[in-house]
Image (cartoon, rainbow, N blue to C red; front, side, top):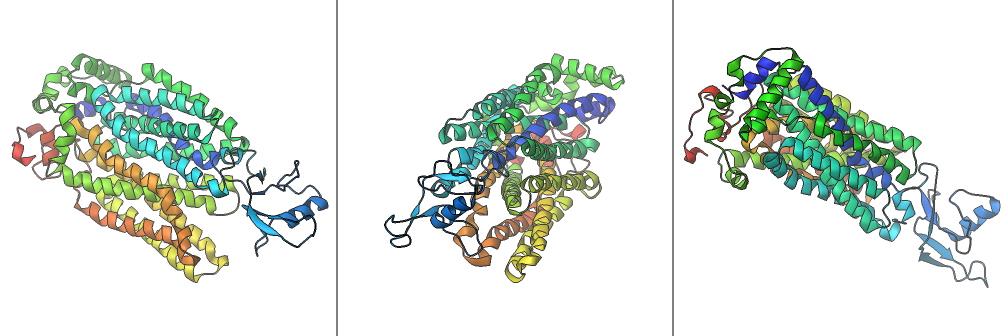
Length: 545
């Protein structure tokens, strides 16, 4: 007897599981929203130096006399745009003699796109421009901390508990961010928002996967990503109507109070309860699921002792889980390959997302498109994962991303400016491929590890993914170190080459399509082999692990 047979008796994706997944998907919306909100809060409006001695200076030209003052004091480039960081100091005794070009310390900003951003409020431009990238990296550093801590909390204290911790932290940090008095406080809040986002997303995904049957895991695993993309699109709409960063942050933060009600609305994962020998609680949830799904469970289906017979024999203490993974000839190679792939995927995904801000045209439309392109990307795995398998589809998606990104090298270097729309198309194609790969690897990696170490294994692999997120903004800016068109294409080249390497490494992993979730260490060792039969798994020699 194994838990997947109990789920099959309940219904692979019945009314009860749909209710749970609706709650999980709501959390995914806000996880997606806050993952990219820094692109709006830290956006850099068009700006120029403030004219010395002109207290009422604005970016918008007020009159011809105002225009003449701008022309006198602000250097301009060949394309007619104004220098953002320098101004001319004129000698009052002579109009154009002894003119010096100096750095300025005050700026005026355009209000055409944003009323105010945190960047414009604190003048994080020119010599302080690197602080915006630093603040964004603090978010991903927080996600990294969350990947380390949330997985441990999830395995030790429960999936529901870790999600509630994330919700409380998200409410506190997002509301605090709206009243950030300085850059340091803002960065610390971004760090905690990163931790909270991981706490909201990962445990919810695990709860959903552990409550559905094998035939529906790919559907439910990718469904959360659609809502993640909807969060990005929702942010673009909210930002369009709420153009002050503080008001936008509050509008996004206040609805998060709803997640406190998950204490009563969301159940704990029965799989996790069984591994902790909390049998009465697991039975209560299973009976409720049967009642909501309008099915009846046979008495032997609720015989928890039979369900956990193998699990209880091989229970691992929380302090030994990570060492067990590292010392395993089976699990360690899987962790290395998944970790490298997660790093490349996360770096490429956020690198390409940052690149969409430079497409030109309407900022809010471009932002919406960056989320919209993810919907077909997440639908493709939904339709094909159970037909051609996780591994082969993942390989194809990574190849598509790699080829598309590398191809931008040709369009950037050899095509004129009027053909650069092709460059944009290739970038969006790369985003589509990497987003699809992102949704596949979340399901794929969860299926490769047994229940007793699943949270720890996924969090350990996610650490490298989050490092990729931290590096993404710096890779995106690496082209500034190289002059000419090659510099513009260099970041895309990095994303493309690494995607191809990751794709071929993934071919080493076993296929998981149609397999029952491994629950014990013995299950995990035999998983992917012809002899994998969970009902007949018995004691496994320690040397095999």
